Image (cartoon, rainbow, N blue to C red; front, side, top):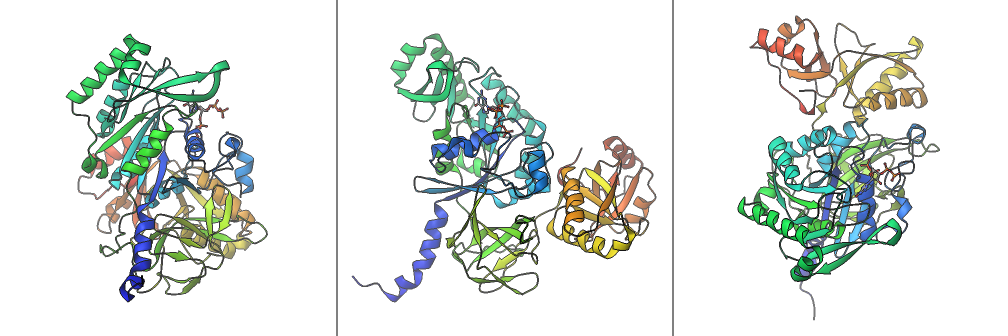
Length: 539
Ligand code: G4P
């Protein structure tokens, strides 16, 4: 049968739509120690994406999912940068973008969330909502992002399931809709009931306390016989859920108002297949992107993508700088020449790589939802758009509320030129936000960060890469508020606060010592414009 000209013409468009439809791009948000690396490993193992268990998990050796590119990172044994992990599962391609889980997180952590369509909120069953989870959740909320909740470590003593659900609803206003229900209390965990199918999966521990659990499937009758009173209690709790209307609801899930909840345990690999299936069935595929003018761009429009993260010094020998781009529309083919929207200049993609844990392999083609890494990307900054065909530009990625501030000075005043160049570069890359004021002068910019680790990266790179070692003097401020030109004179007169201008966008920020000081300022100056910034912040 011959194909018509129209069919031939439409083939690439159909291909892009089909490829996008089978992709799920997501991140795991959690507090350190909730089990993110263990879960990542379990997901990857379960989906058979990686062969060796040790490749992902382990505090001292996280190189499977993250990178070991920087000396400092190796020395501290933590991940400073985020990478993407591709997990093939059935017909689906799951792109898991890593948000560094260390307490010293940085703006990178937040920015990753601008490149995903869905988040898994991972909770420790004994701890519930913890501070870092809450901060990251705020970013998801600001974007109305769908969130799937996974209550982990159910094999250990923990809290009551109903109490955990109540905490989610009360503290963050997210309506929990459990998809499965645990039989047996945390610590004496027997198995999980699938709420929609009514089936029971019994947890069978392997002899000798081995950590690989086996899943045994029972009918409700078999389960009632096997679990006795515990089963009765679980089914009663489930009936209660039915009465309070905790049923999955697609519309409110997609709006970020309700969250399907799964109970499980990543370490013994229990409840992981349900999580994978939930991602496939419920998590959204990449949507049509919306450009800076608010116009929808069809997925099958020519290639477009946005830089959500920059990383430098990955290869010492080449001193390269890499830009991680999330594809928004179209098919990417290696070798394509793209246009950099900010400058209108061409950008060659001959050496583009796909990112898979620490492995970097050359990518031939990629689709919406995928992450590609562009090398030699010194001209690019976080938030920049690259496109093929007619011009398109996406809205910048918002900067997040800094909580740490330090004055930077060149240690050697003779190296001021290098100092300035370095500061401009690190600002453009989004390593820190650089703030200036006439009072302090150009020679003493104030660096603003979400996590103090960002300052270490600045010190390291200024010395190693720009040959301009810096001295950092920490400031006592812990929060920033946005003000406007009309309010600036009054803001300048405040005591215990300081007005600075962000270099990147000219935004005027008022730095304030703490929330008590803020309250006093707000009380005494009711007309002053002091707007909160997105996420983070001690407020
Ligand atoms: P993180 O990336 O979120 O920081 O957490 P990570 O996976 O490193 O897990 C933190 C600790 O919690 C680890 O123990 C891990 O084995 C344990 N853990 C994770 N999921 C589960 C679970 O479902 N059940 C149980 N019982 N434990 C779990 P660790 O002793 O701190 O580290 P390690 O020596 O095992 O690496």
